[in-house]
Image 1: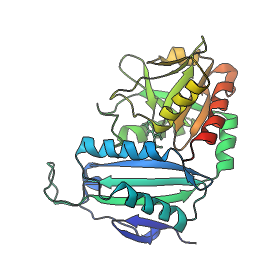
Image 2: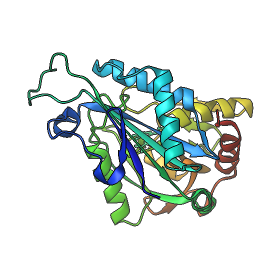
Image 3: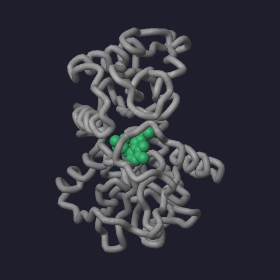
Length: 283
Ligand code: PDD
């Protein structure tokens, strides 16, 4: 079965899918994106991703190319056409095609692209059972990390650095020595005192949809939670560390910069939150 992509109103073969060379996403990273996890044919945290998409578009003053209802149809059609029961749906909206000029063009239609792919949920669950390792790198990003912009150069350099060191993810460290988040995930610890801790929302991090959901799960479990910054040292000495994102859901971390966290084993709380998340995120 060949893969299908959605490009500006048409379902086309993935292999031939393309946008114009003067698309502002291509030339300026002038666009936003969303990623949904699909489990058992359901889009996880659907409403949250729609809300954040709207916010990101609003911050960049890009008009929504279609209504939420129409977009929902396209996303489901993409899952159906690509037979995705477990996988990921990727959506990108850019300001559109215009002669290259930094300032916004007038009367340009936004470009929209959707792709969908299958992933192996068994493999992802096994990775979570084993736990993963992270390294740290300086956070070299811009000052509006709260916008889910396709401008991801520092993030890809961070992830590449992690892979070159055999690690799964890179945690980024700000000028004060505090962890902001992962290159494509939010960062969490369970402190020595047993408090679930993740950095507070601000323009320094992306407000993860999985993060928000895990906070509600923690409240249901009546866990002590603090949304605040933490240092590398605190993380390395924590009881547990883990990451959240649409691609990793909740994934325990066993080592940070080669130092074992929680005895180098996936933590019980992170593992429990992953199970809770899988149960409750399908909408
Ligand atoms: N990334 N922080 C950053 C920098 C991210 O890129 C992501 C997600 C997150 C977690 O957000 P969410 O829980 O809403 O997925 C945090 C996606 C998955 C990606 O770029 O592929």
